[in-house]
Image 1 (cartoon, rainbow, N blue to C red):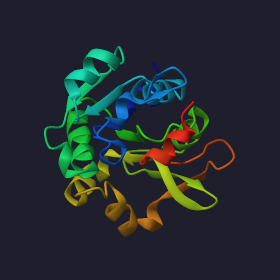
Image 2: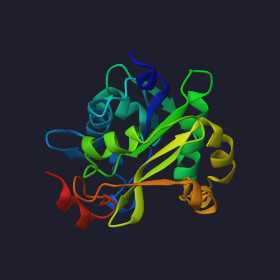
Image 3: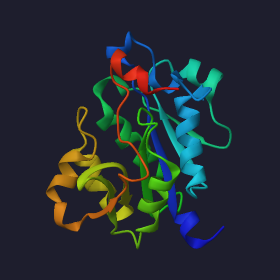
Image 4: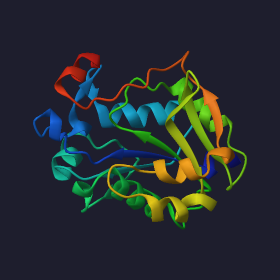
Length: 199
């Protein structure tokens, strides 16, 4: 394992309950014959992330039984109903003390984000102070790479469904934007209409 592979951990946020999808956990929605959580982990691994932590919440026992990807660290977020911010905090906390110097954050409900896009963001990592974000036609999106020097600040500002948004907005000038619009589509699976994106 090279130094960079060891230092950059993949972090999948997969705790959502799919409130606007009739209460179906997003992690278990199928895309290309496998659950979204497996798809997300596969994307991170294909992009070079050896260590992957997955944050679970809604119906986590069912997700563990039906779709738990092998070789991942599964992180329980008992406060998942409070929103994505709580999952991001749980995920970053789980990486403390592991030797990871950056977290490459991927949302489970964005299967259009390709391994090529993740690899581009990952390649822009420099050190613990790195802040890198995919961009789509110049607009910041996911995935996002958070250097460890930022984890405390991100966790302190991650509330509700905002995740790292407030922190990234406050540190806009420090973010390296990596254009990914040519290799990925940054749609979300949030509503019944969005299910048409799944294959």
